[in-house]
Length: 330
Ligand code: SIN
Image (cartoon, rainbow, N blue to C red):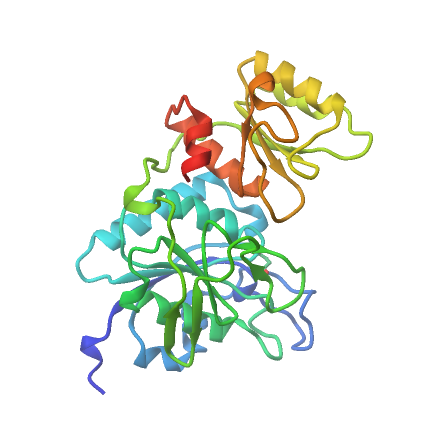
């Protein structure tokens, strides 16, 4: 086979369970994430040779629970550099599942290229019986090598499904079909070399996004509302100089009266407050379960609290004044 005509895909490894290692092949929980190098991950998938020419880089070797804003900046910057090269047709990022949805949305809003960027991961370590990483990696490269994937923003290829970075979320602590796009469903599927999209992505992203990664990330934190919650966490955050707070509210972004009073006080100190929901699907309507006009808050719409935090960080870093506009648009 003449492979010189195959697309050239950069695989950037950051760690995660896909690069995890256990002492016993029967173990799918007791293992160390982010220890197996990218070359070994690629060697486990000989079928890649007939899909793409691979350029591999080890960007990090972490458990994604330890993802940092500094690593986001490094990753997004490297992706932009690679995609600006004429000889790179797409990028695959291998990542842990735990914060994959946050990194994916961050990249969706900051990468400055229409070429495909596809994140993938695994629920079982590379040493496990029935490890899911090798097929997920093959499928992610297959999607990144597909012309149909261009212009759709950052994608997540996982368990034969293709999700939009904006919509996808992890929904299981152990199952190999751990990812869902609750309000919107999958974008398409990838199976046996075939990539098929069933819907498109309508909100702006990548080249149409007004955001760029920052080297100066504002402090933005998440607090939750629950029975008998106190105002202690909000007051401590305000005292620590927080710039923004996302509240993971009950139901349609409602919150305990004590938390609401603390957040009203935070707003009066210049802190941006965004109302999201802890429910896991649905949307938070402006002036619905709480009066945003009176509180001075913003509703997160269909973004979960973790993605709302990503957008709020980007918006504050770029000096956006009308925060509700960006939550309505992105
Ligand atoms: C991680 O997020 O790095 C560990 C868990 C996983 O990848 O499933």
